[in-house]
Figure (tube, rainbow, N blue to C red):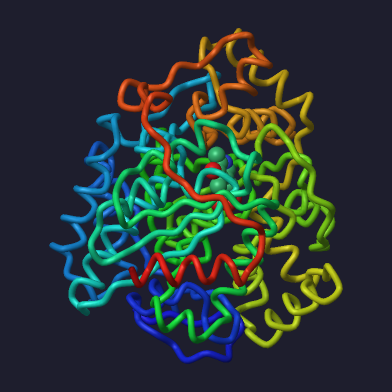
Length: 463
Ligand SMILES: *Cc1c(COP(=O)(O)O)cnc(C)c1O
């Protein structure tokens, strides 16, 4: 399997290079040259199979011949063995036709674990074979950092530096990063915003001397391996509610659009998906785009669902590339215009293909709160604010095609303040994380200054 860039100017590479590189050298995102296909019989055969086996089958299609099927199977068994639910991604029914897929039973209680646990094992495998040690630098608005620290802690071929905006993430989110005692993990509270952290990471990646000295790598959702891992639960959830005989629709809390795009890939691979609702909070760039065909940045609003406080959805570039029939020149033009002018119009034919699959729905803070209360009253389930955005979006979608699966991206105990404020109930941490508040924390505080942080990364990596 070869990977091409959405901007058409970079040479095709294999799976391993696409994963370790993250971004393509022409600034585009890697996608497979063709989408692997699964027949209805192959999809039906996933029914009742253990999650890690379905994962191994699907990931192998994307790894091609670069990693053996046995190695992938072992990595998947290990990665999903860290989840505390035997089904890994269990379904809960909330109304006669609607189900919630719980993606939060991993070590850091957020759906980022599903991909990050596998990614850590992929890195270990590939870097071990190449006798290479990389430094992963990540900026986090909360969940990515915790998932990365949980996944990479104690691994000999990787060091992790997680930058988070001081005071802007929940205490539970912070503690998932800062209580790791392993020496290959460093956490930095940056005296600035998440945007500052992200800008500093970009500057570090542009510094060739630092990049080479510490062998810098990135694990944000532009990394195709994360998308590949997220395709799996679309298949397991869909077969659980009647696919491939019955088509299934999904409703996805969306920010960077990696999760919803994984659903689109599952559809292109042959899974009968009727509709994907991209649910956003007040940061509605995706919802607007699927409504009016214009991809235009707005101002960032701070909401109860902070993991989706994003006004530029990186993975939208992958969908755009597909919908302009893989025209790399056109994709480069559009996303360059987005950087320079803040937006562009989606061509009519491409917009029509997007609308065949996607519906965009934006949900207000009041609707999010009301949905947490109503879901608790009607089903007894406590849901987190990100999941509530998706449940509310489902209720607001006029044409509801059953069955519907809502992706639940965080455990309610990861956002206890918001859940308590809405419902009056304080969600309890699951047993494995219950002593989180008692574990000692370890992190450094630095100003939002690129040179200071680059010097810190160099010193930590070369120590
Ligand atoms: C990252 C995240 C999202 C958004 O997922 P994208 O793939 O960026 O669209 C939604 N909910 C939670 C809890 C998250 O951590």
